[in-house]
Every structure is written in structure tokens, then in C-alpha cells.
Length: 134
Image 1: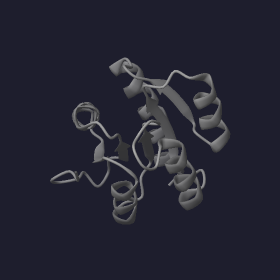
Image 2: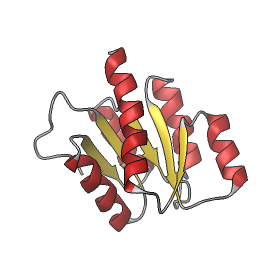
Image 3: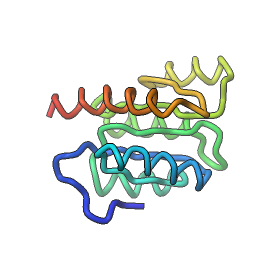
Image 4: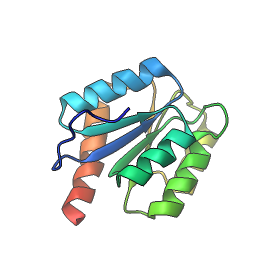
């Protein structure tokens, strides 16, 4: 789901979650706060989005069918290095998932349901650091 008319000055966020309702909520919150958001249901859509835009932040769920968010985080790191921030936004509160996410290179880990303000603060922090670096 690509924004109808993206703001060329706003950071790009790719949100990957297999749950359509969650994708819609995340995209709506972030778009209302000025971000360009592409919501993806899995790895194939994420890769297609990354071929069109260079994201500032990628939000990843861990537990998804097919490729999980940890595999996708490795893919993002392989393509972009640390020029893109990865925030795991997942229902998994498993400490081994959290540890693995940070080992792979995730910048942050939020457990769903998360507070809207926490999400905005986290995305804002990481998006601003990449926009400033450009």
C-alpha cells in the first residue's frame, strides 16, 4: 500500500505485518503524523517496496507465515547496512526472540499492543537520525 501522494520531504517507513488490521492501524497512525508509509504483508511486498523507495525505518513483526521478521531483518541489514533503522513491532515477548532481534541488528523492540506515543517516539527518533544523516 503506497501513499497516494507522498511528501518528498517526509521520511519513508515500511511496516511489515501479516495482520491486515495491524497494518492499517500502524499506517494510519504514522501517516497522520507526517510519514510516508508503505504497509506490506510479508517479505515479497517488503522487497518490492524497498526497490521503489529507500526507507528510513522498517517496522517488522516477528511471527509471520513464510519468512519471519528475523529473516527479513537480516535481509534489510544485508541490503542497507545500518543506513536504515529496524524496529521490531511484534506480539512476541519471548526473550530469545528479543535477543535474536538485537543480535541480527534490530535497533529497537516494541511488544504489541504498544502505546501509540511510544511507537511515534521510537519511529520519530530513528527517522530523524537518518534524515539528518542524508
